[in-house]
Length: 147
Image (cartoon, rainbow, N blue to C red; front, side, top):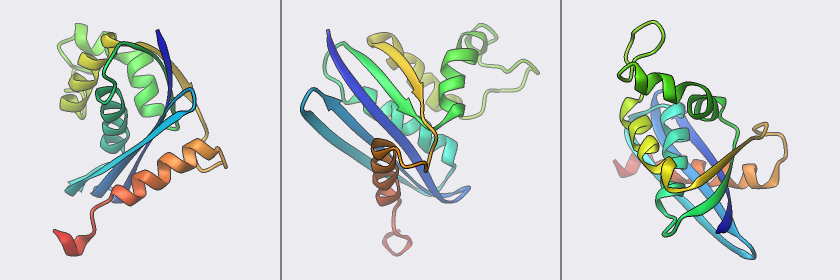
């Protein structure tokens, strides 16, 4: 099985505001950058989720993927809460609907297609690939004049 390292980040100009996501994919010596944006209004958490969704969606075959993220929201959501949310009908422990349910459900569909490991990295701490994903996310934020 191919091993892919994936570095993801999301960014927002305002929160909520215009948003962008960025992904760096690495398989051996091969690398691919992905980025995009959302307007008119989104949140940083949604962009963090979108980055992982876009990265996993771009993979054409089953892979062992190590996802490097600075988002505890995404990593903890998947590794600590997702099973419980699904069992409770996409409700939290206090019986409220899970925020960003549409993106969590998309991510939930993608996760079983791959073998996933999660690595948390401290954001804006000089990690070269996290900084690269952040730059891609910021570059993906739509320009207000183009709306």
